[in-house]
Length: 424
Image (tube, rainbow, N blue to C red):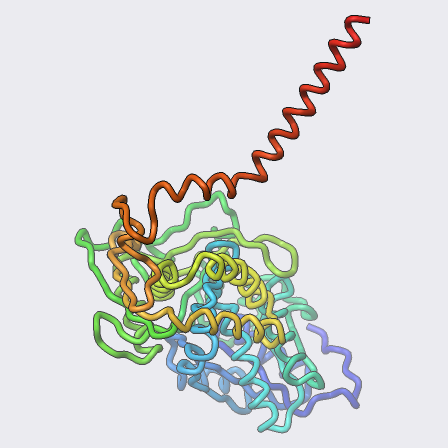
């Protein structure tokens, strides 16, 4: 593999690499060593991966890094990234709960912090040239450190596939962390686990959940007995699970365990990537699915119709911003201000029954509920009489009635003209 054409004045002294310990970044370290005459600083930003961080650091150094960092940012990830998306109700294309997308801006932020500490202005990432993450990483760097340089090996090296990467490492006797027959592209954090690649690349293929799933069981293998849980919120933020106060990250970890046991939150979708192509992914988000459902149940009774309608529109735009890497933007911050305003009364408890992949509402209550049982019942009360509806319907339907009368009048005029023409 030929050395990249580097001008001496542009040669970095240090490159800070976003290191996950997976196949791609394991390959990137020796590749950078061969093509750039500089130190490689590997940075693993732990947003909830299951791997041992010390082992990952050792793997990075064994692959050629001169230094490796492991940063635990799980609490920050939940409070500053997951919870804003939850409050916004952001779901990309109706299904994806943004697990990978919401983590990337935080990872980029931490990379920049380490780079500044190390005296570097060059960052490298392992995102592919067909993926969303290259956009997310680089837009974050542009927003926070516009003078930094970025190296994206997948856009410039000769490696064209995961099979090529495996062959590259094998030719250099460097151990790699996957089996060729199981080399799914996975991303895990405290919120979710995603799966891409291999047979999933053909949307006609059904996923083999028995070998694929890691956070969850397939719904058909879930317990035959249902389980009911209660999630309590204060101003849109989850605070208690089954009456027990927990920190947001503790609560999410426990919901992942419970939801995973019942096979909830599994999504199989073909999504529209930022770069224009479609891609299929399998997402496991058991705890996130439970939080979104519970939060939505509370909003149903706590928000008035106009606010809820506007918030649902905002949720779509919010999801598009996060998915597209536009986290560090004035618009996302402005939308947060709107969302936070709507959450002032989203306080209460939602009950959910879990059964074989299903999340079934089992009751919701709030001191700020706008639901009035007397109004909603069929019994006539002081605030609402059945006869009141007649005048409302007349006024509400007036534009339609006026339009229909206009068409009726026009049709009558046309028929009269036809009759007059026929009599001549």
